[in-house]
Length: 124
Image (cartoon, rainbow, N blue to C red; front, side, top):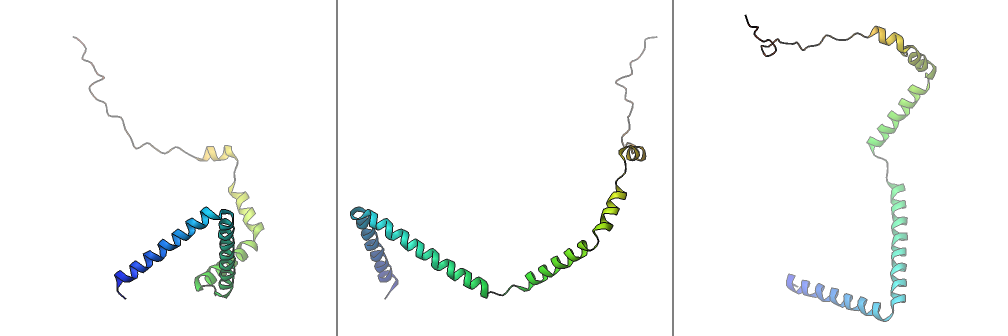
């Protein structure tokens, strides 16, 4: 069978399906929608069952294992010394007045150049 005969067969099949759907929709609308919803429900249920079974069988990747191990180590590291972290934070915080006195203004990198526009010649 060549490509042209196969494409004609496919188009004929699609045309017959379209005629059947339209005739079903016009003659028996309630039954048509009931059948559509049942097919969608069964399809969704099959997809959910297949998806969840495949999800359980799939082994976690090597990168995910490494990531989970790093998260576990990080939690263990920061959970063991919470009092030490709080004391460092308390030492870093100083009163506002102390910080203002300690900070100095940096010298400006700009300078004023005297031009001749503001200077006027005085008569005599």
